[in-house]
Amino acid sequence: MIQPYRTMLMKEFRVTLPLTIKEYQVGQLYSVAEASKRETGGGEGVEILVNEPFDNVPLLGGKINKGQYTKKIYHFQSQFPSLIKMIVPNESLEVHEEAWNAYPYCKTVITNPGYMKENFFVIIESLHFEDAGQQENVHELTDDQLKQREVVRIDIANDPISANDYKENEDPTKFKSEKTGRGPLLGNWIEKYAAEGPIMTAYKLVQGQFLWRGLQTRVENFMFNTHKRLSIKFNRQVFCWMDSWYDLTMEDIRRIEDETKGQLDTQRLESEVRMTAE
Image (cartoon, rainbow, N blue to C red; front, side, top):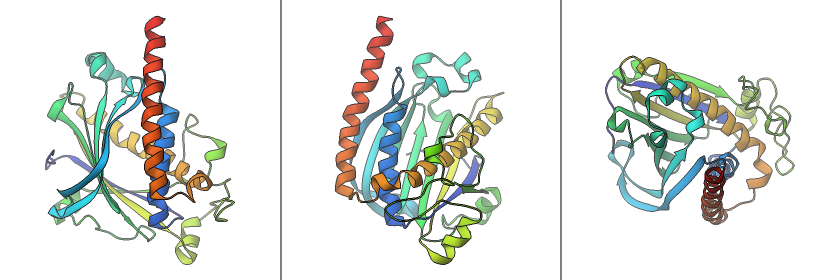
């Protein structure tokens, strides 16, 4: 497992939603599967290699955890910075993701073993609590790490979103859940749900490094900006897709994940065949 560099960039993203942590567990897993299907095609997309239970793995603070382990390859050449595409072979423009989901704690490691190897990685550690994001050190950082860390609060309703990412049916300021009555999220909605409930926050500690002279700062900034953009987009979807996942059980989620793996493999391979024929 990759060990963090002492000098790497560190940001803690705090994403608050009007959900319980149990609801968010189901909602985020459903949304990961659904988003993966929507983003696969044209020779790009998500390839799921492993999705299986794990046990006896030391994670947060060396504590033994058990949960679900996944390993994926993301084939998204079109989304790499143009500077990287100029100097890295096309076949190496993919990232590998390993994730240990011991909810409410999750750890994700993103690498590029085909080219960058140990010179590039992103480590994301997430903890989930039923609060409005006011805890200051859930990841038990040292004093030096706290000085290095930057806190970024994400408001899924009020933070700006790019025109390319915006969809009216994924707008929390316009969505009202038929099953729960929650929404639309207007004004200072976090204060409202903090008082009335439900409310929860995902505390996502993101550490990353890209060691390449002349490109390091630009690419690292791109990495963190991309994480923020995708986090806003994804969690808007979690909330606005609520009526699709609200009644699902974890058994339903595992079935959906198995079905999704087959669909992703078929979509990606069919796209590759069409592109080769053309």
